[in-house]
Length: 366
Image (tube, rainbow, N blue to C red; front, side, top):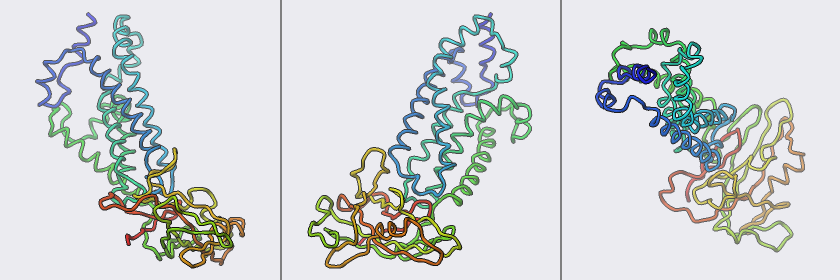
């Protein structure tokens, strides 16, 4: 008798027309396939989140990480997917054998769709893969767009749709009793379009501006400018004969100017490691946990000499003011970064100097 009840619940009326004939030839018991798909999706989600967090640098292109931290919510459906075989292969048959205790409480979830929710989350996380710290605005949209899809998909298919099925059907276009591809597209496209518009708005707020060398970027009282960049094969501290830089292809010298046009003292950028970074295709010698293509900074005490010229050390200027800049003051200095390898054509993205939470400056190829 239990088997007949399952067969009734898994009729093909909920599938689009082209899939119905194929679905009618499949076994009524789909729990084995669903368990396999759930486990594959869960493992893919865990792997994707780890790769994006530990192997990428896209976070550096955004000003606020609070929304971006929602990527960790994808670990919830990932966990559900990994343990789903335990339910579909063991728990569900046992529940039916026990005559479905508590079914009156779970009846509203009969319209939940496990696999579509899992697929939506996997696709959403996958959309984030092309984004890097140096991506332009329209590519950066993929991060919030992917995050929104990854969060909304399981919420919709696992909770909202089954709980409020009747009310949801009234909102959606098309006739819900006709499960065709036309109806599916009529309902999917407006939803995806709405999520895309929301993602554009989020990106407009979070994406760091991209400027050219010499162009100032202002933020909350500070005006920061990358005023000049130069390359050298070796640098030395003033008063020292020991050269530095023979372990790199080139050294990149970056001049930073910071002005405080506000009414209160402000924290200077660069007081913490990674506040000012260089991301370039020819920087690949990274330590574990560093952003990909991060050019390691060369730390020097005091002013710098390179190519016969003396340069004021930005770190020394910052230390002399205890990392603060007073209203009306302006501080200028140079930082040095290692370029590990010679640039190659077709690297896939340009090089940029990034001041955390402030802006990005393009490094033009010379």
